[in-house]
Each structure stands twice: as C-alpha cells, then as structure tokens.
Image (cartoon, helix red, strand yellow):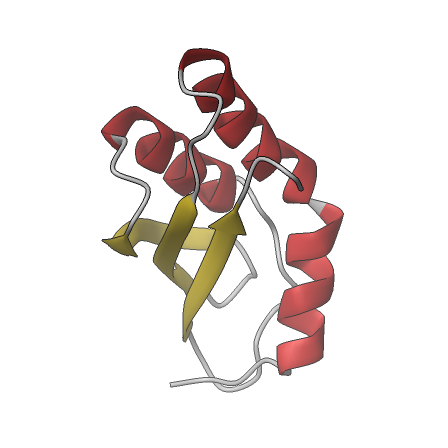
Length: 98
C-alpha cells in the first residue's frame, strides 16, 4: 500500500467536482427533492490514474446517478502515490440546496 496526503486527494476531487455534480444535476431534473450520500471506494494506481471505482454505499437510491459518479471518479488523475497503490473511500453528499 502506498500513501497520498489527504489534502492532495481532496484538492483533486474539488478540482473535478463539477463532473460529479453534473451526475446529481441530471437526477434533479427527474426528482427535484433527491438527496443523499454516495460513498465511492477507488484505487489510485502507481502513476496516479484511478484503476477502479465502485460505490460502496449509497442513500441516494438511484443506480444511474451512482454509476455516473463512479465514472466521474474513474476519470480523475491524482499525483503518483508514494510506495504503491492507494485505496480511498470518499463520501459525496448531495442536496438540492447545494
């Protein structure tokens, strides 16, 4: 197992949050009151690319949005971790108010 500082991971996610947010905005067109948390477990490979991403838990209850969030995370690129791959579990919280 490698390591990557938490603040670096958060910075990359914040920089790419628009693609995750678009997934949720599509759901809001269908269900304006939709809200919940989608927790994604993903693996950052030696070069910084996301090797896999899967929803480990969700209260959103919408499979299409969950798959979209997985895809958005898979497209993220992180700095190369020190010492090998890194597994991250990250919660995305969605609410209509922002």
